Image (cartoon, rainbow, N blue to C red; front, side, top):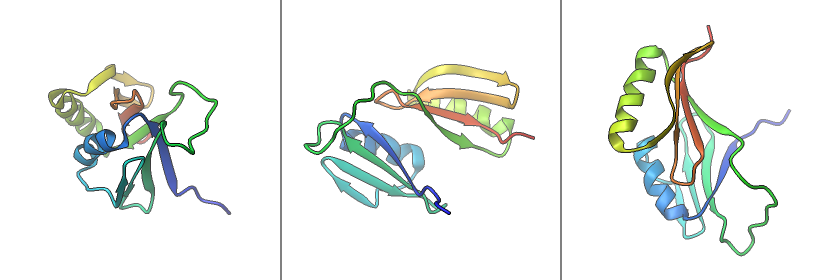
Length: 122
């Protein structure tokens, strides 16, 4: 059985995005090059940033049709992160609200990728 072990976001400036994610994830990249940056996460997943200007970058897709979700333990943690991310100056695309699954909000990274914070469904 295959298990995904890499999330890759296409970004305009991987080193600038790496600064954003270093602060957000509270960890340094495991590898950093002008066109590619990788973070090794505690759960075994690798989170990477790849330049859309790299000579070997090819994609016919446009826009951001996905989200990275950070599932936290409870609604109080959702609300704490909402306040902390607003204070850091992150763009909030979807304000804090109660959805069918609980408290949630969506912020954007420097390239407009959606970052959702929520708690697991009951």
